[in-house]
Image 1 (cartoon, one colour):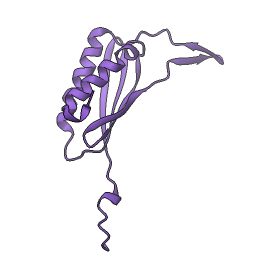
Image 2 (image 1 turned 135 degrees about the horizontal axis):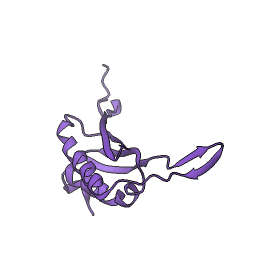
Image 3 (image 1 turned 60 degrees about the horizontal axis):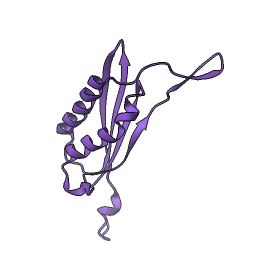
Image 4 (image 1 turned 120 degrees about the horizontal axis):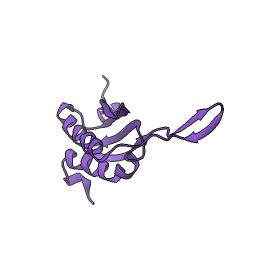
Amino acid sequence: MNLEHLPLSRQIDFVFAKMKGELCHVSSGTVFIHIRNNVVGKFGIKHLPIESKDGVLAASPKQGLTAQQYESFRQMAIDSLKYKQHWTHGEIMFDFTIRQNVLMASVQFESNYNMASYNSGKAL
């Protein structure tokens, strides 16, 4: 699949489709999406589904996102793109958690610029 020709919103939709199985097994974490030239590169989920009690590690018994929570999260991620302005390189992070069976999520944009791309060999 050549993502360069797809709008960023369709790329985000593709990303969420690829992570759906994992999102349905975690109840909190951060979805990260690296963007270069408005094309999604690396993406994934940062989460810690293992908890310790009295020094013993055990998988968390918490459920992951329900189908409805997943769909709301995916749509929120796509809708958040209207707040991305004037940058083509960076990262988008979606923090999420389930509290009392309600999905809570926030978005953070990180724009990246590279001085080397502005360097024309002339003194500043």
